[in-house]
Image (cartoon, rainbow, N blue to C red; front, side, top):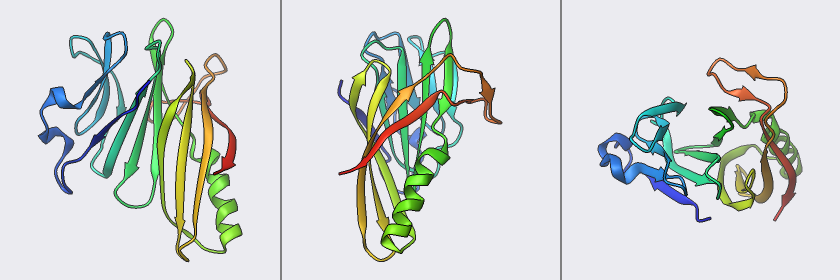
Length: 185
């Protein structure tokens, strides 16, 4: 499944300035889409809101969306204009749910590399690299440190719905998106 990328046209221009149709990334079955404007939303085929995945995209330099082949999972990577990135996702059973990759999962890797390179992190970005299964996607990232050192890594991001649900303040179901098999490239 090809990953589709939405990019801001220029610094300071909100995603909402681009025509709406150009920002919709449709699911393979055509029943749903991720719409990136001043917020990132999951919508149905008629454009009606299902879930708001990200409320504010003002700090994003690039938003990447990947739908699973069965249209039941979608992952969104936000890469900021400055230092970091974040991953939100949604999956469908009887209804749509939203989840977020917890910072603690990548945070341990970042801390280990800061110690290894004896330098602080100054930039970190991630991208999606294809679906392994309908509920697991590969993620690749790169880190740049103040001393100029760079570290590239890869891991598998897996949906694990069905456990005890804990909602965070933003309404994300925590613990449903798990990073595993972290390794350097």
